Length: 154
Figure 1 (cartoon, rainbow, N blue to C red):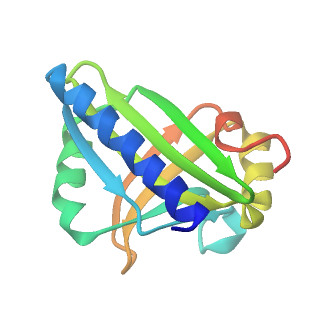
Figure 2: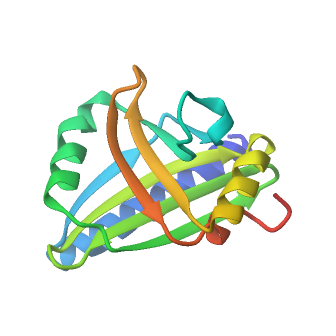
């Protein structure tokens, strides 16, 4: 088994444990295991949208839409570990009033994240976007601090 497979497995295990713990406390949890996560600076699109773009599997689309429609996500925590240029991340977004959480799980290639890191730090905010491979938008989450999303050397 490759080192990356071990790191990805560790990330999935973290997300599973987190979801189980939240559910044991009577929370509703939706997990997005991204097929791919792309750093997107404003220069990459037709708008000034920026952030990490999580490509979700189609089977989670309705559940993610429902969670976002129901919830007002007022908190987030980022759990990461790094292996070389790969950042493995679980972002836990929470709506404490409704005991509702969305977990975004993915691996980010930091070699392509430099421009995004600069923009996010300059603006003092970061976004996580969830969409399907065909570009269908499912959710956008705003984070009021970009620093936890990028190691200091990025």
